[in-house]
Each structure stands twice: as structure tokens, then as C-alpha cells.
Image 1 (cartoon, helix red, strand yellow):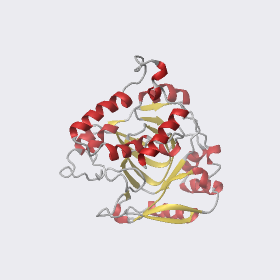
Image 2 (cartoon, helix red, strand yellow; image 1 turned 180 degrees about the horizontal axis):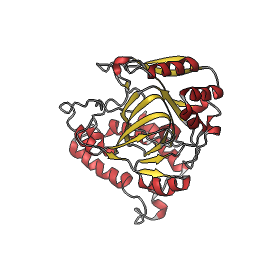
Image 3 (cartoon, rainbow, N blue to C red; image 1 turned 45 degrees about the vertical axis):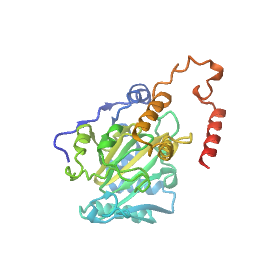
Image 4 (tube, helix red, strand yellow; image 1 turned 135 degrees about the horizontal axis):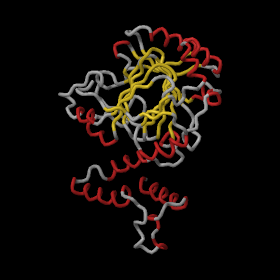
Length: 339
């Protein structure tokens, strides 16, 4: 996949919520949290056998059908587009948990079998007692867990706009991460036509075509990699690109997204601003865009602390930290502008 070994993600041991909040989060860097959930009952059952793992989930299953994806064998487990990018290379299906889990187990024993995957499902929808039995307290706000179950698979490099902690329950996961500024070298696909909501890198990491994607080598030079075992977790900061390979047969992962479009309470989210800028700025002449960039740097991206002390306090208006009233005023103004 690369011409030289990738740098490994920093590994932390014996991480507590306090260590995570005070020492890891402020770094804004990815971190492997070794053995973070090794004492979860679900991990204990997975370590015994796949049958014990299946029985564990069966015992707390709420009933009803689950929604999952099916990828044909020729795709080698990679969730992606079809050949001409007119559609995706997988199909969505609905079925009972028992049959799904049995098919995942059967397919995990055959390298040329289909890939089945339950992806990013809210745990509470299917396994309402999971959170009580497997507690997690590493974000300050209560964040609902999501679950991923399947056989060997590949999720192409993408980003989330949330802080993310992903915990391996069963199987292995290889994470390859890139800092946000590497977007220029990842050959990212469409924004509004994506397999799972986020834009994907179009590079096949298993066999990259450096003639077609020459800048991808620069991305690899800046990549970080980690291989996680059951009980391990990884912290992925918001907007970091991550490519995820699931190995080892039956794979189960539980993750927690804090903030962003999924669990955030504040609307609009930053991605909405990109769409606004596409309407108002993107097609301007390059020199004008450079001027607007300077204004955005001044009003948005630079440190705003004590920046406007030269302005009398009573006339700073929206330059001061926004209140609920001023937010409402801005939203109403934007609604009028967008009509």
C-alpha cells in the first residue's frame, strides 16, 4: 500500500476519563487507547468465542428486523461506487438478526464470499441494554453508541465532523489516518452523492494507482496507522480522514460521535457554510476570492479573543460572542437572503 512504513499513532495505556479530557483531547491528535474497553462484558464474551458473542447479542436483542448492506465477492469487501460511479457497489437489505449473524459467520470463513455489514446503527434501536451493561464515560456529554457488525470489509478514507472514539469488540481493525489538510492529496469524490453521507477518497488503498493519483504519495508520507485488537479503542479528532480495514472474521465495533451533524445541538453546522460559500464565493475571480479569504481569516479563523477591544463594547454587536438572541437574528437575516 505504501513505499515506506507509515508512522504509528501514539498509544496510551490505562487511560481514564480525566487523562483523556486533560491530556489527550487538548493535543487534537489521534490516539490509540490500549485496552480501554477490555473489561466490557461484550468483549469478554467475544474473547471466549463467536458463539458466545452471538448469544450475548441475542440475549439483549430488542427484536424485529435489522438493516444491513451486502457487497458481492468481486468487490473484496470495499464499500464504494460501481465501475462508472452511477450507483454504489452494494445493496441494502432487511432481515432478522439471527440469519444475518449466521451469514456473517459463514462468510467470514471464506475469503471469496460476500461481505455483510450492519453499519453505524444506533445501539439503542437493536440492543437497548447494551449501554447499561457496557458503560462509557469518555465524553463530557452523554453520547449514544453506534454499532458495526460484519465480516472482513474496507471503508474508504472519509472524515466525520464529530469527535470520535471507536472501540473494537471483536476481530481486528487497521486504521489509516490523515490530517485534514491532506484533502488536496486524497482525490476526494462527490459531496452530494456518497455511499454513507461523507465524501470518500477515490484511491484504492489496496492497490493505489500513482500514475492516476500521483499526489497520494504525499498523503501517505503524512499518514498515521494503527492496528487495534479486541478491547482497544482509537480517538479520531474531528475532520481527520480515516480509512478502516476490518479483519479477523466476525468484526464488531462500537463507536461514539460527540458533536457535529449527528449529535450536535447547534445548527447550522460548519459544513453548511461550505454550501453557502459555493453559492456566493466559489465562482468569483481568483483575486476576489483571495480578498474574501483575508476577511474570513480575520472574522472567523483567527483567534477572536480580545480582538475587538478597539471598538466600544456597546456597538460591537455580532462581533461579541453570540447570544441566543443574536443567533436568531442572523438566522432570520439569512432566511431572507436565501429566498
